[in-house]
Structures are given as structure tokens and as C-alpha cells.
Length: 186
Image (cartoon, rainbow, N blue to C red; front, side, top):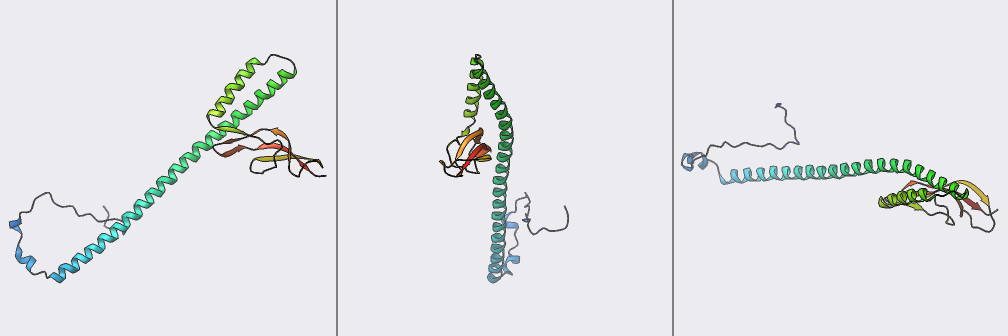
């Protein structure tokens, strides 16, 4: 151990395991100490005890804060990785939807694709990934990304007229905004 003292450290006195007999205590040493001195000594020890208690409370609070922050960092890291995976999965899901549309337009049997899409949708539902419904809604930059504007005097400004790519929410966070076309009164 180093000879330096750290103000944050709490000194600990290690007591000997040897028992002290009451008879071996020399009463003459104690008779020299007055009640005033004992009171001062007691007050001093109470003050030290109070200081150590405060330091202990601060250390405990710091530990609890660190524990909460660590837990939050872990959850955010896991959610970030899950969201990255979901974004890649959604690209594949979009490709399957496009394939189904092509098969349907070509009058080709798409029962196999329908089954795969149902499985994908149940997987998304299981992990609480929900689509953002945008068509007919008012543009919200928190959920939508406008990539084109059309002039339409019959619609209010910023009304979504077309969904170009579906957006999704996971755990109450947008993981992919909906790409939309919006209207402007012309």
C-alpha cells in the first residue's frame, strides 16, 4: 500500500482477534481523562462518522447512477442492432411484396409468396414492428419523408397523396420513415 492518503477513502482499523480481559485494563490511565475530553472526543468521532456516512451516500448514489446509465446504454445498443437488422429485413420484405404484385399482375399463382409474406408479417408483429399509415394523412416530418410534391387545389397543403415506400415503427421509434408524395394548393 502507498503511504499517500486519499480523502475519499474511509480508514478502517483492524482489531486484533485477541480478546482483552476486563481485569487487564489499567484504570489509572482512564482516570486521567476528564468528562470534557471524552465529550470532545465523542463529538469528534460523531463528526467523522457523519462525514463518512455522507461519503458513503454519495458513493452509493454514484453507483446507482452508473448502474442505470449502464443498463440504458446496453438497451440502446441492443435496440440499435435490432433496428439495423430490421431495416435489412424490411428491404427483403419489400422485395417479396413487389414480387407478389408482379406475379398477381401476370396472373401467376402466388400462394407460396402469400404464405411467406404472412410469416414475415407475423414475425414483424411478434417484435412489435408496425407500419406507418400515411395515405390521406397530413405530412409529419417525424414519420414521413417527402420526395415529391404535386399541385392539387382540392387537397389541403401537405396532404399525403401517395406512399412510395412504407415506413415502420419499432418500440415507439421510427426505424424507417415513409417515403411520400404530398400536395400543395396550386
